[in-house]
Length: 158
Image (tube, rainbow, N blue to C red):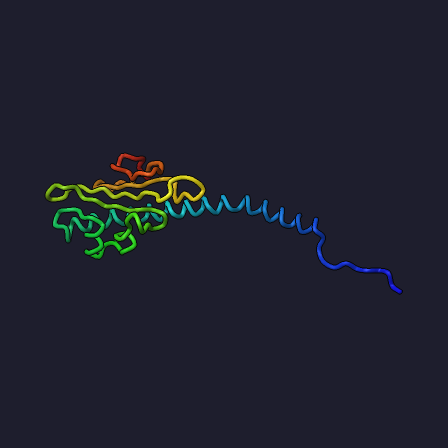
């Protein structure tokens, strides 16, 4: 009679060691992935603000007859797509809300475009900066907060 019994499989210690290693790797990787997502959201928001700034200049020189327009005006003129013009507080684009408001003068000689983070802080923050642009064409940024920028007085982006 053969008394040698071979046990196949993994011991509990080996399984726990593998789980611990996976936990350590994910603890290192997840914050980096979240930071990458925030950076991508900010890049998208900055690009969108620049698109709106260009669209405002085109609108003023053509369809607007010397006046700047709102996001709806820019969309109706075919200068921005619906992902920007429909970006209200219920439909953000890449974690940001966008506005473009012309002043009340006639002709509307000034405007302010803003991009504000949906979630300005915490682990699920969609970005760390808000962006703004006006008729000068300079895009600025400030630290993210729960309120959008009310003027283009942040730090200029090179």
